[in-house]
Length: 321
Image (cartoon, rainbow, N blue to C red; front, side):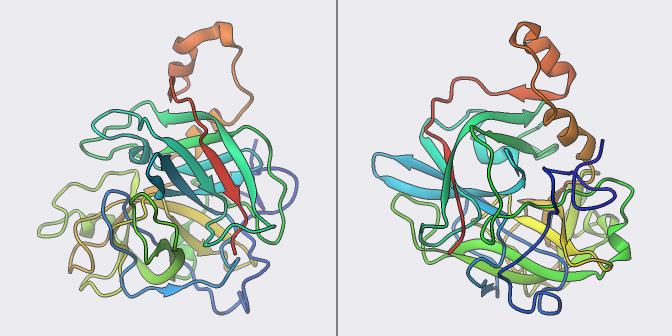
């Protein structure tokens, strides 16, 4: 079974994925890779520019709601009618699932409007072998309580399988970060979609010393510049790394921002979770759910951790302005 807009992609539901209906001149102005930033810190995509309204219609903002307000936690990507892909560390602080209530704009939006749809989270699935201390297997899935209908403002990301060679495509692109004048604290609502150009870099180089000295895993991608400059920064974990298919007018979701050291630093580019590496895991988790009587052991055998005890209302807002 394949899922997606073409050969080698996850097919979310009938139709195509990776489209950008509202992006002006998207055949030429959008290059290839999208980058982002980290949820625990407070700065943004370094030297990025604000994206057009509706330019990236699959990006979602996972937000937390508490007594003192609502703020952006991290980012995800809608890749099927009822599933969002993001990073595991968004939901863990010292091994704990956040106790505050959460909701998510899909795609990323500055101001909710009539094009916005709201969805609650039915399930949170974190990779069974996620290691918070090393960010290994930093990936999670959010199942929505109701399917989503596509529109100009709501589109799906294309998840490629291992048969597609990212290196065959143009090795440049835009970084899409969801940062802005407000950052990661209660009451922060003035978020702005950011774009920054990054370069996909050799993982062995990123793992060398004095780069990351072995901290980058086989399930990671490395994107940025050797001498710093334009870079992903703090403030937006889970944001997408994408590349444009050279033979078609759609974009592949190849990574999600996981971690980095500092901002705009030489030999310290952004580190992303590779979606290709986890293609089979994603496919396994998004098939019809197991009967309840098969229990947690069956869930574990499928490589997932089912997070219990979150009461919501975690939800998604869909439709960027």
